[in-house]
Amino acid sequence: MTDKQVWLVTGAGRGLGIDIAKAALAAGHAVVATARKAKSITAALGEHDDLLAAALDVTDPAAAEAAVQAAVERFGHLDVLVNNAGSFQAGFFEEMTPDAFRSQIESTLFGPVNVTRAVLPQMRAQRSGLVVTVSSTAGIAADGDFLTAYAASKFGVEGFMEALATEVAPFGIRTMSVEPGFFRTQLLTPESTNFAEPSIDDYADRTKATIEGWQSMNGKQGGDPAKLARALVQLAALASPPVRFAAGADAVGVVENKAKVLLDQAEAYRELSSSLAHDDA
Image (tube, rainbow, N blue to C red; front, side, top):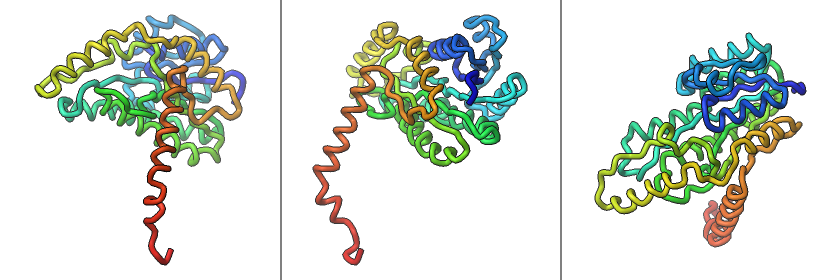
């Protein structure tokens, strides 16, 4: 990749996406910033010679292809994709409707799948590129209530990116999953979080407490999205970006704890696990 890269950032109309677009522009890169409504991008980022605002609903494969085409027509190539668009369907699994659960998977798993599918032919032709997908610590460890749908999508993203890495590496394409802890983004605002309607008495007390807990965190998270955005620009400039980046001290702690739990569980049942082969194997 050249020093000046062309970035395509989804969910760039607000929150972390705005910070990523600003950081890339400040570093001298060109940015194709996308959101469901392109006017939200212009309102957030203004006008810039190296900025193209494009409407994109990541759940629409045709729209993803159109955004990539617009990027290449404007800037000639495409070096970094940041799958950032997201939402939060929060609630206990039994209280969440099938449509709500499915919408989470559509936006935060199939969204990155759709945009990545649209980008890869261009990156493969270039023999270079980086696919960055904003996952979550919920894609490493699903601890806590209200995370079933969200964690399912993020665990899916983790597997998708890890498996894709080996498929596209021969073409000079890298992947990187970013696992933020709690950052002061807009994920917990009413625009991004949808709470399941309480419907089961057995969950009533926990539902009330959990909703209050999530709402109380909004705007008080410890992580600085602007610093995360600058870190991503720094990592994207590396010849070999990390396959996974734990973003935030809390995220590092989650990864360390999950690694220990997995090792402990493997060791605890080592003898039984190792006894399952055919006798003639």
